Length: 231
Length: 231
View 1 (tube, chains in turn brown, orange):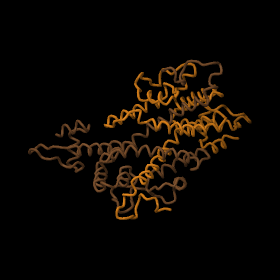
View 2 (cartoon, each protein chain N blue to C red):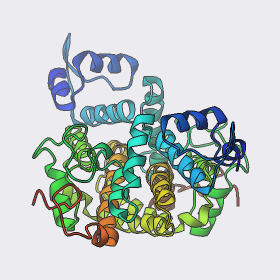
View 3 (cartoon, rainbow over the protein chains, first blue to last red):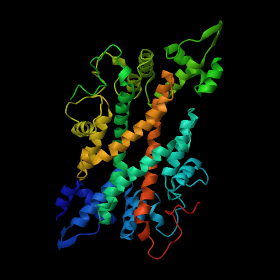
View 4 (cartoon, chains in turn brown, green):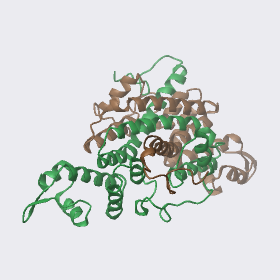
């Protein structure tokens, strides 16, 4: 396909595609004339992944190039591929050495995550940034006077494990590493608001189930909160 | 207790407490001298709720006062109380009428949320903002070329229902409406990063379980991603 069709199908402007070509994020097309080239489905897939990495994960073009280069070397290594696109460790360190800079790793500073991970029997890289997020949240809740620690999160962790299996079932459907990587980014980052929205919806339903009965001691009255005004 | 102890125990500065007293967010203490007053546990609980509503939910002082006034009229109505603190409908409309302004309700604009809620058999207010968030996310994923709709989210919705039961179990432990309201705010809003962190941790573990075997065809090598370098 021509660059204009590539632009239309990817939603990425012509000028941006040309910039990616110059920067080496996209390999050159097959030249058909002095100023024309043909692009194929692999360009489209790569472009979609670039869009996900820059637009959704917020990577710079340079960081995006490093991820793409790393992925290129990892065709059959899905676990490492996912580690790179999830940002579990920086792509620039390659697969040979653990990250030194970029991934903060204050030793012993995540006791809550450590304890929960051990109890769950999970295998988690020391560099997964979610460790820090978890300890930070528990710390915030404690600083606000809540008597809470990682034990409180065990039932949530079990539900998270089931959620992760659904996520991976989806990613598993794709065999092309570029597509797999794109889906992994979209499924992880973009699904978050929807999953949190589902929790809030379910909370309202659970609230009605538990407390709805004593809401209207004088009988039902019209108004919000009953979910009946639409059905 | 004196205002200084109230400040120490709530973490809210003296001057801010005096401001809340002037604005009527906190009821006056019991006067013990011309310039002194005694405060009790109910002041502390109310102050903690104010802190959660302003600091965590990001409400203005005026909006916070409306929530507090509404809660004052709803002592035994837990479902409505939760609806107000979760922001399902604006507190200023009271319990008599559905919200007109403030809660956007573009009719028929949330087909994905509507269909999923119906399939789940949930009772959800038309004004729950999570409806819009859900449809927006599905729309974003579709615009990026994903062939996805609400059906995809059904297994996630079932996990969300279990999550909501855990949330409500926690809130249920508190009988004082002020404490219940504070916990509801903290549990809903502040837990989100921790729950998303658990999902990311579980994804890594699931990735190792599924793909870890073909990661190192030449045998294991030290590096990130194995979760063993710390244990």
